[in-house]
Image (cartoon, rainbow, N blue to C red; front, side, top):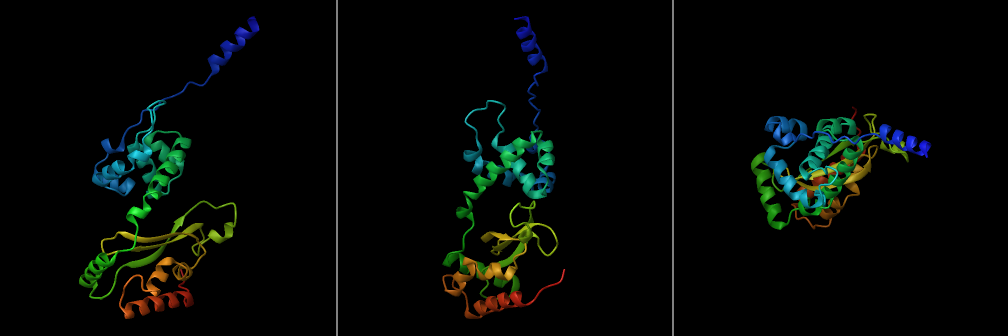
Length: 240
């Protein structure tokens, strides 16, 4: 009996106490310039994002010091903006690394569920307005958007690792993005490994099919120029 009591006492004595960290809200600490530097958004835009995502990020109860939606969003945005390791992100808001990892996933899923509401090709009225905006800015008629590719760095995957090494020598996803004259993203393709050439991504995208089949109305010259650009991209390798 004495041995059992001694064992229970020792287990309690050496049991690791749970530490509730003091979590400071960056919105209460940083000014707009500092917020943009760390999260790529000003205070007004951050508040709008928090209101938009709160239904998906709010926990049912506040037990175990649950993170509010504002801190969850800021943790994820810090990771998205700086590409920092989970350690760095978690240290800034004073949460455990595993918590930061789960939060980044929660916010990513919440954002992905809203893609269709914000990322879409313009309708006929919107396309006409964009053409006029681009004409005023550049003097070129019939332009409805700008398109380019960017490499988003990732950790080396376990399968087909070599496919993700881009021409600059690091692992990435080659993301094709199209935007309108107001810098709003209207089309996004984020499924190709870093070694994939921009021309192939464009050639196999639904965006090019929409232009080729006339679902997006553009002048014939602009359509030919787009096809010519895709052909050039497939034939020319630009040295780094």
